[in-house]
Image (cartoon, rainbow, N blue to C red; front, top):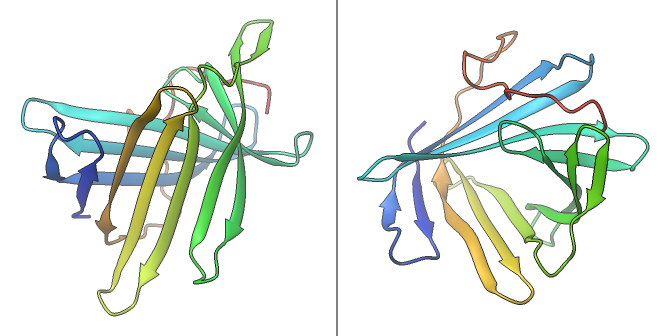
Length: 169
């Protein structure tokens, strides 16, 4: 998949190629899981952003575990906008380690909005990600387009599954 991304931090660069690998599988707890691994090809070194999603009946939403050790859990809420684009908004954030399950205060939490759509004329998906903090402003973001290659019945390649899986959904 060939993509282009724009970061909101002008020091990070523009027109940075990136790949997104989304792979469904069953985790160690038998849950249907999707891993989302984004790798940005910055000139100095690649930067990777991992997330793993599971559905939580208890919470009534998808829980997104950020990072390879799943210490930060974020509730995700899905809607469609008036153009038909998928819009994902983050909700409550929790830090999880062993018996600890603590809510992350809004003062330090990031609020994410992701918008994905398909551009039929260009035959590409469009994506825009913005993560902001209520006090500090923009924390992370990118926008760009990508094409998709689909595979079925394939386990995630080595290095795509998280190092640690959290039992709580």
